[in-house]
Image (cartoon, rainbow, N blue to C red; front, top):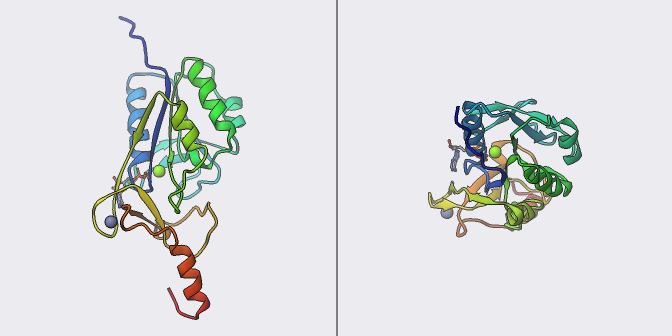
Length: 199
Ligand code: ADP
Ligand code: MG
Ligand code: ZN
């Protein structure tokens, strides 16, 4: 069999919720499996929305994944022979994930990560900006604005909380275009609740 040099390095897939990040990650990882490359997939413990041991897309594609509590655990669990490493919901990892991804890419592995580029206020969601900066390839995915149908690059939170991380039901979030995105919406909801009005 002829031997083809495989691509190695860091690929970042980022965008708002519902933009197809997990779909795209699963697509790339499945193709690697079809090419009979050794693949290992990780996701952070915080993302328990659907399944404990799978990454799942809103369109119900899924792929087996190992749940980890920290970036260091990825190195502990990594099989040396693995050629492709996939990580979903990378925004929920500690900053150590930047060094981990860089190290694995430098070891000759293909590292593909997917995550939110901005939070519900539209502010860059660390460590994704740093990962984008050191990546070899960056793919920005767009969703469809829930309000007007335009291409959507922002995530709108629909519940009254300012916590950055609210892993949640799909009905807590909407994809929005720039024009329809309102970073102050959670505050307005809180105020209206204090006024006694309902959502
Ligand atoms: P992400 O990982 O970026 O949150 P997923 O890959 O899980 O996105 O889901 C993408 C799928 O979500 C789309 O293929 C589509 O079936 C569905 N979907 C639901 N709402 C939207 C929306 N507003 N814009 C685009 N896709 C949507
Ligand atoms: Mg996803
Ligand atoms: Zn819109």
